[in-house]
Amino acid sequence: MARNGKPRGVRLRELVGALSGARLCYGKAIEIGDRAVVPVARVRAFGGGGGGIGTPEAGQGGGGGGRIDASPIGFIDVGPEGARFQPIRDPERTMSAVRSAIATATFVVGSVAGVRALQRGRRPALPAPRKLLERRSR
Image (cartoon, rainbow, N blue to C red):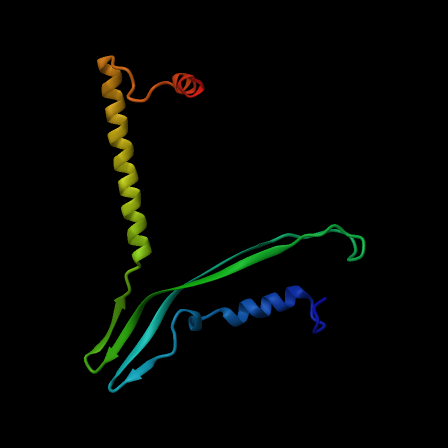
């Protein structure tokens, strides 16, 4: 039981019901002269739960949790000439793509160099681990 006398499940349903709708996606319009700017956010909700058996005093428990995540994605510019959506670029997403591309290129170049070395019958560029250990013990 919750403090206000309602079961926790009822409180959770009320919370989720209050959070639904467009209020989470669009912010309050900011008016500047004859223009208005409406912030827009992407909202994601994650959750899960479990149950239990027995009585509250002697039962086996369960639990749950969740997360609500909101991130700005752009704004709507409303003026005398009409409305248009202007996206906001996410620099972290761009950098993640650049890092992935660099990692992939490094892997491909290293793989090709390794295959060529094996085809030519050369020894690997790095000494075998056993030889490294022998050098350290001297």
